[in-house]
Length: 108
Image (cartoon, rainbow, N blue to C red; front, side, top):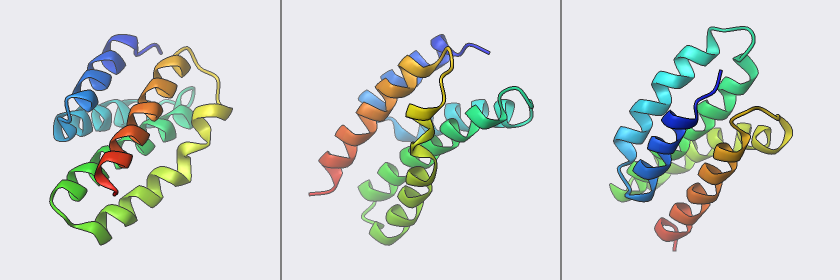
């Protein structure tokens, strides 16, 4: 499956720091992907981004311990962004770049 339009929307939402809406869209995609054997492995990338977006919202609320726990789930799957080639890889790498920019902003 190709998600370019949906991922472009998510990129925009992350850039404007609408982490809740980004989370909701990512979670919807993750649920769809995890139930298809052909895209199950790729679903873990989406799961990583779901957790990254939650961690930012938790950081904004100054819930640092919870944010750290959720961030660790992101890190668990992050390596798949580079290892797994899909038609969505370019956008996944762009999202990863944004994730680290936002993390740097909220972790000072």
